[in-house]
Amino acid sequence: MLAPGDVSNGSIMPAYPWLYEQLINKELTPRMIAAMRTVGVPYEDGYEEVANVDLDKQAARISENLGLEGYDIVKEAEIVALIAYLQRLGTDIKANKVAGK
Image (spheres, one colour):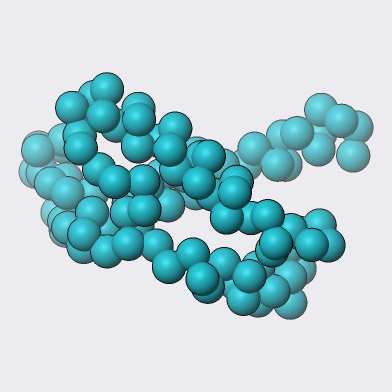
Protein backbone atom coordinates (compact mmCIF):
# COMPACT_ATOMS: atom_id res chain seq x y z
CA MET A 1 0.00 0.00 0.00
CA LEU A 2 2.97 2.29 0.50
CA ALA A 3 4.80 1.44 -2.73
CA PRO A 4 2.80 -1.06 -4.83
CA GLY A 5 5.28 -0.82 -7.72
CA ASP A 6 8.03 -2.19 -5.46
CA VAL A 7 5.96 -5.30 -4.76
CA SER A 8 4.54 -5.87 -8.22
CA ASN A 9 6.75 -4.54 -11.00
CA GLY A 10 4.72 -2.42 -13.40
CA SER A 11 1.77 -2.04 -11.05
CA ILE A 12 -0.44 0.95 -11.77
CA MET A 13 -1.94 0.85 -8.29
CA PRO A 14 -1.39 4.17 -6.53
CA ALA A 15 0.34 4.46 -3.18
CA TYR A 16 -1.70 5.10 -0.04
CA PRO A 17 0.81 6.82 2.28
CA TRP A 18 -1.86 8.46 4.45
CA LEU A 19 -2.88 5.02 5.75
CA TYR A 20 0.47 4.98 7.56
CA GLU A 21 0.13 8.56 8.84
CA GLN A 22 -3.54 8.90 9.83
CA LEU A 23 -4.67 7.36 13.10
CA ILE A 24 -7.85 5.51 13.98
CA ASN A 25 -10.38 7.56 15.94
CA LYS A 26 -11.62 5.02 18.48
CA GLU A 27 -14.21 7.46 19.81
CA LEU A 28 -16.19 6.74 16.64
CA THR A 29 -16.31 2.97 17.22
CA PRO A 30 -19.71 2.82 18.98
CA ARG A 31 -21.37 4.93 16.28
CA MET A 32 -19.75 2.86 13.53
CA ILE A 33 -21.05 -0.35 15.09
CA ALA A 34 -24.54 1.15 15.36
CA ALA A 35 -24.39 2.18 11.70
CA MET A 36 -23.29 -1.30 10.63
CA ARG A 37 -26.19 -2.83 12.57
CA THR A 38 -28.60 -0.75 10.50
CA VAL A 39 -27.35 -2.51 7.36
CA GLY A 40 -27.61 -5.96 8.89
CA VAL A 41 -24.26 -6.70 10.51
CA PRO A 42 -25.15 -8.96 13.46
CA TYR A 43 -23.07 -7.40 16.23
CA GLU A 44 -24.01 -8.73 19.67
CA ASP A 45 -25.90 -6.38 22.00
CA GLY A 46 -23.42 -4.30 23.97
CA TYR A 47 -20.49 -5.02 21.65
CA GLU A 48 -19.92 -1.31 21.12
CA GLU A 49 -18.89 -1.11 24.79
CA VAL A 50 -16.03 -3.63 24.39
CA ALA A 51 -15.15 -3.31 20.71
CA ASN A 52 -12.13 -1.08 21.32
CA VAL A 53 -10.64 -3.75 23.60
CA ASP A 54 -10.82 -6.21 20.69
CA LEU A 55 -9.47 -3.54 18.36
CA ASP A 56 -6.48 -2.89 20.63
CA LYS A 57 -5.62 -6.59 20.93
CA GLN A 58 -5.76 -7.23 17.21
CA ALA A 59 -3.91 -4.00 16.38
CA ALA A 60 -1.13 -4.81 18.86
CA ARG A 61 -0.58 -8.23 17.24
CA ILE A 62 -0.51 -6.75 13.74
CA SER A 63 1.84 -3.93 14.75
CA GLU A 64 4.14 -6.40 16.50
CA ASN A 65 4.21 -8.68 13.45
CA LEU A 66 4.96 -5.73 11.19
CA GLY A 67 7.81 -4.82 13.53
CA LEU A 68 9.25 -8.32 13.14
CA GLU A 69 9.21 -7.72 9.37
CA GLY A 70 11.10 -4.44 9.81
CA TYR A 71 8.16 -2.02 9.64
CA ASP A 72 7.81 0.43 12.52
CA ILE A 73 4.10 1.20 12.45
CA VAL A 74 2.04 2.32 15.42
CA LYS A 75 -0.97 0.16 16.24
CA GLU A 76 -3.32 3.13 15.85
CA ALA A 77 -2.41 3.67 12.17
CA GLU A 78 -5.20 3.24 9.63
CA ILE A 79 -3.06 0.73 7.70
CA VAL A 80 -3.29 -1.55 10.73
CA ALA A 81 -7.09 -1.29 10.63
CA LEU A 82 -7.06 -2.16 6.93
CA ILE A 83 -4.83 -5.18 7.55
CA ALA A 84 -7.16 -6.29 10.36
CA TYR A 85 -10.14 -6.00 8.04
CA LEU A 86 -8.43 -7.97 5.27
CA GLN A 87 -7.39 -10.70 7.71
CA ARG A 88 -11.01 -11.15 8.85
CA LEU A 89 -12.60 -11.33 5.40
CA GLY A 90 -14.61 -14.53 5.14
CA THR A 91 -13.58 -15.89 8.53
CA ASP A 92 -17.03 -15.48 10.12
CA ILE A 93 -18.72 -17.22 7.20
CA LYS A 94 -16.29 -20.13 7.43
CA ALA A 95 -16.75 -20.35 11.21
CA ASN A 96 -20.54 -20.49 10.80
CA LYS A 97 -20.27 -23.29 8.21
CA VAL A 98 -18.03 -25.32 10.52
CA ALA A 99 -20.47 -24.78 13.38
CA GLY A 100 -23.27 -26.10 11.15
CA LYS A 101 -25.09 -22.82 10.68
